[in-house]
Image (cartoon, rainbow, N blue to C red; front, side, top):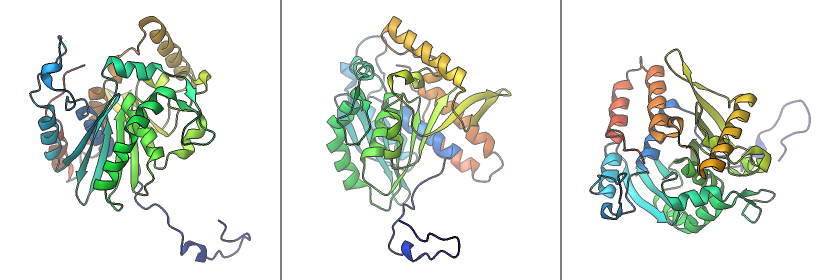
Length: 321
Protein backbone atom coordinates (compact mmCIF):
# COMPACT_ATOMS: atom_id res chain seq x y z
CA UNK A 1 0.00 0.00 0.00
CA UNK A 2 1.65 3.21 -1.18
CA UNK A 3 0.24 6.71 -0.96
CA UNK A 4 2.88 8.48 -3.07
CA UNK A 5 6.35 7.78 -4.40
CA UNK A 6 7.60 11.39 -4.51
CA UNK A 7 8.80 13.73 -1.76
CA UNK A 8 6.02 16.31 -2.07
CA UNK A 9 2.48 16.46 -0.72
CA UNK A 10 1.00 13.04 0.06
CA UNK A 11 -2.70 12.54 -0.47
CA UNK A 12 -4.44 10.55 2.23
CA UNK A 13 -7.10 9.28 -0.12
CA UNK A 14 -5.65 5.81 0.25
CA UNK A 15 -6.55 5.90 3.95
CA UNK A 16 -10.26 6.47 3.35
CA UNK A 17 -11.07 2.79 3.07
CA UNK A 18 -8.18 1.48 5.15
CA UNK A 19 -9.01 0.19 8.63
CA UNK A 20 -6.37 0.40 11.33
CA UNK A 21 -6.49 -0.96 14.88
CA UNK A 22 -7.50 1.82 17.27
CA UNK A 23 -7.72 -0.16 20.50
CA UNK A 24 -4.01 -0.97 20.94
CA UNK A 25 -2.67 0.04 24.37
CA UNK A 26 0.71 1.47 25.33
CA UNK A 27 2.60 0.08 28.33
CA UNK A 28 1.25 1.20 31.69
CA UNK A 29 2.63 0.57 35.17
CA UNK A 30 -0.90 0.40 36.54
CA UNK A 31 -2.03 -1.97 33.79
CA UNK A 32 0.99 -4.19 34.47
CA UNK A 33 0.18 -4.35 38.18
CA UNK A 34 -3.47 -5.17 37.49
CA UNK A 35 -2.53 -7.86 34.94
CA UNK A 36 -0.17 -9.40 37.52
CA UNK A 37 -3.11 -9.51 39.93
CA UNK A 38 -5.16 -11.36 37.32
CA UNK A 39 -2.29 -13.82 36.85
CA UNK A 40 -2.05 -14.48 40.58
CA UNK A 41 -5.79 -15.12 40.75
CA UNK A 42 -5.41 -17.61 37.91
CA UNK A 43 -3.74 -19.94 40.45
CA UNK A 44 -6.90 -20.13 42.55
CA UNK A 45 -8.26 -23.71 42.54
CA UNK A 46 -11.33 -23.01 40.43
CA UNK A 47 -10.70 -26.16 38.38
CA UNK A 48 -10.23 -28.84 41.06
CA UNK A 49 -12.48 -29.41 44.11
CA UNK A 50 -10.46 -28.82 47.32
CA UNK A 51 -11.19 -32.35 48.60
CA UNK A 52 -9.11 -33.78 45.72
CA UNK A 53 -5.99 -31.86 46.74
CA UNK A 54 -3.69 -33.74 49.07
CA UNK A 55 -0.45 -33.14 50.91
CA UNK A 56 1.08 -30.21 52.81
CA UNK A 57 0.57 -27.82 49.87
CA UNK A 58 -3.18 -28.41 49.72
CA UNK A 59 -5.22 -25.24 49.47
CA UNK A 60 -7.47 -24.10 52.30
CA UNK A 61 -9.88 -22.44 49.88
CA UNK A 62 -13.38 -23.85 50.32
CA UNK A 63 -14.62 -22.67 46.95
CA UNK A 64 -12.04 -21.52 44.42
CA UNK A 65 -14.67 -20.42 41.90
CA UNK A 66 -16.47 -18.28 44.47
CA UNK A 67 -13.20 -16.75 45.64
CA UNK A 68 -12.22 -15.91 42.06
CA UNK A 69 -15.63 -14.40 41.34
CA UNK A 70 -15.48 -12.30 44.52
CA UNK A 71 -11.94 -11.03 43.80
CA UNK A 72 -13.00 -9.98 40.31
CA UNK A 73 -16.27 -8.43 41.48
CA UNK A 74 -14.30 -6.24 43.89
CA UNK A 75 -12.81 -4.61 40.79
CA UNK A 76 -16.19 -4.46 38.98
CA UNK A 77 -15.31 -7.41 36.75
CA UNK A 78 -17.62 -10.34 36.17
CA UNK A 79 -16.31 -13.84 35.66
CA UNK A 80 -17.57 -15.03 32.29
CA UNK A 81 -16.05 -18.50 32.13
CA UNK A 82 -13.11 -20.61 33.21
CA UNK A 83 -11.02 -22.93 31.07
CA UNK A 84 -9.86 -26.31 32.28
CA UNK A 85 -8.56 -28.35 29.39
CA UNK A 86 -5.71 -30.76 30.22
CA UNK A 87 -2.67 -28.48 30.64
CA UNK A 88 -4.55 -25.21 30.07
CA UNK A 89 -6.31 -23.41 32.91
CA UNK A 90 -7.47 -19.84 32.79
CA UNK A 91 -10.45 -17.55 32.84
CA UNK A 92 -12.17 -14.75 30.94
CA UNK A 93 -13.40 -11.70 32.86
CA UNK A 94 -15.24 -8.64 31.57
CA UNK A 95 -15.77 -5.15 32.94
CA UNK A 96 -18.59 -3.87 30.75
CA UNK A 97 -17.90 -0.71 28.74
CA UNK A 98 -14.25 -0.80 29.87
CA UNK A 99 -12.17 -3.88 28.96
CA UNK A 100 -11.93 -7.67 29.18
CA UNK A 101 -9.08 -9.89 30.36
CA UNK A 102 -8.12 -13.40 29.27
CA UNK A 103 -5.74 -14.79 31.91
CA UNK A 104 -3.80 -18.06 31.85
CA UNK A 105 -2.38 -20.03 34.77
CA UNK A 106 1.30 -20.93 34.90
CA UNK A 107 2.95 -24.22 35.79
CA UNK A 108 1.24 -25.82 38.78
CA UNK A 109 1.24 -29.59 38.23
CA UNK A 110 3.43 -32.46 37.04
CA UNK A 111 1.39 -32.50 33.85
CA UNK A 112 2.35 -28.85 33.28
CA UNK A 113 6.03 -29.69 33.76
CA UNK A 114 5.65 -32.20 30.95
CA UNK A 115 4.45 -29.39 28.71
CA UNK A 116 7.39 -27.18 29.72
CA UNK A 117 9.97 -29.88 29.03
CA UNK A 118 8.55 -30.86 25.64
CA UNK A 119 10.78 -28.23 24.09
CA UNK A 120 11.32 -29.54 20.56
CA UNK A 121 10.51 -26.98 17.88
CA UNK A 122 7.68 -27.86 15.49
CA UNK A 123 6.92 -26.20 12.18
CA UNK A 124 3.39 -27.54 11.62
CA UNK A 125 1.47 -24.64 13.12
CA UNK A 126 -0.67 -21.78 11.84
CA UNK A 127 2.34 -19.61 11.16
CA UNK A 128 4.37 -19.84 7.97
CA UNK A 129 8.12 -19.99 8.45
CA UNK A 130 7.79 -20.18 12.24
CA UNK A 131 8.70 -23.03 14.57
CA UNK A 132 7.05 -23.16 17.99
CA UNK A 133 7.68 -24.95 21.25
CA UNK A 134 5.86 -28.28 20.81
CA UNK A 135 4.53 -28.47 24.37
CA UNK A 136 3.15 -24.92 24.40
CA UNK A 137 1.54 -25.23 20.98
CA UNK A 138 -0.02 -28.62 21.67
CA UNK A 139 -1.42 -27.41 24.99
CA UNK A 140 -2.98 -24.29 23.46
CA UNK A 141 -4.31 -26.20 20.45
CA UNK A 142 -6.26 -28.51 22.77
CA UNK A 143 -8.15 -25.60 24.32
CA UNK A 144 -8.20 -23.33 21.29
CA UNK A 145 -11.78 -23.91 20.15
CA UNK A 146 -13.16 -23.33 23.65
CA UNK A 147 -11.17 -20.11 24.04
CA UNK A 148 -12.14 -18.72 20.64
CA UNK A 149 -15.81 -19.53 21.22
CA UNK A 150 -15.84 -17.80 24.62
CA UNK A 151 -14.10 -14.68 23.35
CA UNK A 152 -16.42 -14.43 20.34
CA UNK A 153 -19.50 -14.82 22.54
CA UNK A 154 -18.61 -12.51 25.41
CA UNK A 155 -16.19 -9.86 24.14
CA UNK A 156 -17.72 -7.34 21.70
CA UNK A 157 -15.50 -6.15 18.85
CA UNK A 158 -15.34 -2.65 20.34
CA UNK A 159 -14.30 -3.80 23.83
CA UNK A 160 -10.51 -3.91 24.40
CA UNK A 161 -9.26 -7.38 25.28
CA UNK A 162 -6.09 -7.84 27.33
CA UNK A 163 -4.20 -11.14 27.36
CA UNK A 164 -1.99 -12.09 30.26
CA UNK A 165 -0.20 -15.00 31.88
CA UNK A 166 2.66 -15.98 34.16
CA UNK A 167 5.33 -18.55 33.29
CA UNK A 168 3.66 -21.26 31.17
CA UNK A 169 0.58 -19.02 31.21
CA UNK A 170 2.62 -16.27 29.57
CA UNK A 171 3.53 -18.61 26.72
CA UNK A 172 -0.16 -19.49 26.25
CA UNK A 173 -1.19 -15.82 26.33
CA UNK A 174 1.42 -14.98 23.70
CA UNK A 175 0.20 -17.76 21.41
CA UNK A 176 -3.36 -16.49 21.92
CA UNK A 177 -2.18 -13.03 20.85
CA UNK A 178 -1.06 -14.55 17.56
CA UNK A 179 -4.01 -16.90 17.02
CA UNK A 180 -7.02 -14.72 17.88
CA UNK A 181 -8.21 -12.87 14.78
CA UNK A 182 -9.54 -9.73 16.44
CA UNK A 183 -8.85 -6.02 16.00
CA UNK A 184 -9.68 -5.30 19.64
CA UNK A 185 -6.62 -7.01 21.16
CA UNK A 186 -5.33 -4.22 23.39
CA UNK A 187 -2.08 -5.73 24.69
CA UNK A 188 -0.48 -8.89 25.97
CA UNK A 189 1.30 -8.69 29.34
CA UNK A 190 3.47 -11.68 30.25
CA UNK A 191 5.43 -12.25 33.45
CA UNK A 192 8.40 -14.62 33.66
CA UNK A 193 7.56 -15.98 30.22
CA UNK A 194 9.89 -18.56 28.67
CA UNK A 195 10.94 -18.41 25.03
CA UNK A 196 8.09 -19.65 22.85
CA UNK A 197 9.26 -19.83 19.25
CA UNK A 198 11.80 -18.79 16.66
CA UNK A 199 12.49 -15.14 15.89
CA UNK A 200 9.93 -14.92 13.07
CA UNK A 201 7.05 -15.46 15.49
CA UNK A 202 7.24 -11.88 16.73
CA UNK A 203 5.64 -10.58 13.52
CA UNK A 204 2.63 -12.89 14.00
CA UNK A 205 1.70 -11.44 17.40
CA UNK A 206 -1.15 -9.04 16.62
CA UNK A 207 -1.00 -6.69 19.58
CA UNK A 208 1.70 -5.03 21.69
CA UNK A 209 3.46 -7.62 23.84
CA UNK A 210 5.02 -6.36 27.07
CA UNK A 211 7.36 -9.03 28.37
CA UNK A 212 8.02 -8.28 32.05
CA UNK A 213 11.08 -9.92 33.61
CA UNK A 214 11.79 -9.70 37.32
CA UNK A 215 15.49 -9.19 38.03
CA UNK A 216 17.15 -12.67 38.02
CA UNK A 217 14.10 -14.77 37.16
CA UNK A 218 15.54 -17.89 35.49
CA UNK A 219 12.50 -19.00 33.50
CA UNK A 220 12.90 -16.42 30.69
CA UNK A 221 16.30 -18.06 30.07
CA UNK A 222 14.74 -21.25 28.71
CA UNK A 223 14.55 -22.86 26.26
CA UNK A 224 18.07 -21.82 25.31
CA UNK A 225 18.61 -19.41 22.47
CA UNK A 226 21.17 -21.66 20.77
CA UNK A 227 18.37 -24.20 20.21
CA UNK A 228 16.76 -21.73 17.82
CA UNK A 229 14.46 -19.98 20.29
CA UNK A 230 14.08 -16.22 20.49
CA UNK A 231 12.05 -13.91 22.69
CA UNK A 232 9.25 -11.80 21.24
CA UNK A 233 7.84 -8.53 22.46
CA UNK A 234 8.89 -5.36 24.20
CA UNK A 235 10.92 -6.16 27.34
CA UNK A 236 10.44 -4.49 30.70
CA UNK A 237 13.07 -5.39 33.29
CA UNK A 238 12.23 -4.98 36.98
CA UNK A 239 15.51 -4.02 38.63
CA UNK A 240 16.46 -2.95 42.18
CA UNK A 241 17.04 0.78 42.47
CA UNK A 242 17.84 2.82 45.61
CA UNK A 243 15.95 0.54 47.91
CA UNK A 244 13.00 0.27 45.55
CA UNK A 245 12.25 -0.98 42.05
CA UNK A 246 12.56 0.60 38.63
CA UNK A 247 11.23 -0.58 35.27
CA UNK A 248 13.87 -0.52 32.55
CA UNK A 249 12.81 -0.50 28.92
CA UNK A 250 15.34 -3.11 27.94
CA UNK A 251 16.22 -6.75 28.39
CA UNK A 252 19.09 -8.07 30.46
CA UNK A 253 22.59 -7.32 29.19
CA UNK A 254 24.15 -9.96 26.89
CA UNK A 255 26.41 -11.15 29.73
CA UNK A 256 23.48 -11.41 32.13
CA UNK A 257 21.40 -13.27 29.53
CA UNK A 258 24.25 -15.73 28.99
CA UNK A 259 24.55 -16.30 32.74
CA UNK A 260 20.81 -16.86 33.11
CA UNK A 261 20.69 -19.19 30.09
CA UNK A 262 23.50 -21.36 31.46
CA UNK A 263 22.08 -21.43 34.99
CA UNK A 264 18.59 -22.26 33.67
CA UNK A 265 19.91 -25.18 31.62
CA UNK A 266 21.90 -26.45 34.61
CA UNK A 267 18.82 -26.48 36.84
CA UNK A 268 16.86 -28.48 34.26
CA UNK A 269 19.66 -31.04 33.88
CA UNK A 270 20.10 -31.41 37.64
CA UNK A 271 16.55 -31.10 38.95
CA UNK A 272 14.53 -31.95 35.81
CA UNK A 273 12.54 -28.79 36.41
CA UNK A 274 12.96 -25.05 36.43
CA UNK A 275 14.39 -23.70 39.66
CA UNK A 276 11.54 -21.70 41.18
CA UNK A 277 13.48 -18.93 42.87
CA UNK A 278 11.68 -16.00 44.46
CA UNK A 279 12.17 -13.70 41.47
CA UNK A 280 9.93 -15.97 39.40
CA UNK A 281 6.99 -16.02 41.80
CA UNK A 282 3.97 -14.11 40.56
CA UNK A 283 3.30 -12.47 43.92
CA UNK A 284 6.77 -10.90 43.76
CA UNK A 285 6.08 -9.61 40.26
CA UNK A 286 2.81 -8.16 41.51
CA UNK A 287 4.31 -6.61 44.63
CA UNK A 288 7.14 -4.91 42.73
CA UNK A 289 4.87 -3.63 39.99
CA UNK A 290 2.55 -2.19 42.62
CA UNK A 291 5.55 -0.42 44.16
CA UNK A 292 6.41 1.14 40.82
CA UNK A 293 2.82 2.13 40.03
CA UNK A 294 2.28 3.73 43.43
CA UNK A 295 5.59 5.60 43.30
CA UNK A 296 4.92 7.02 39.83
CA UNK A 297 1.36 8.04 40.61
CA UNK A 298 1.74 9.15 44.23
CA UNK A 299 0.81 12.76 43.49
CA UNK A 300 -2.21 12.03 41.32
CA UNK A 301 -5.65 12.55 42.79
CA UNK A 302 -6.82 9.27 41.37
CA UNK A 303 -4.25 7.28 43.29
CA UNK A 304 -6.45 6.62 46.33
CA UNK A 305 -9.31 5.18 44.31
CA UNK A 306 -6.91 3.16 42.17
CA UNK A 307 -5.26 1.59 45.22
CA UNK A 308 -8.67 0.70 46.65
CA UNK A 309 -9.56 -0.99 43.37
CA UNK A 310 -6.28 -2.91 43.22
CA UNK A 311 -6.50 -3.93 46.87
CA UNK A 312 -9.98 -5.25 46.24
CA UNK A 313 -8.75 -7.54 43.47
CA UNK A 314 -6.20 -9.20 45.73
CA UNK A 315 -7.33 -10.15 49.22
CA UNK A 316 -4.00 -11.06 50.70
CA UNK A 317 -1.24 -13.11 49.06
CA UNK A 318 -2.04 -16.56 47.82
CA UNK A 319 -0.23 -19.45 49.42
CA UNK A 320 2.84 -20.66 47.60
CA UNK A 321 2.50 -23.70 45.41
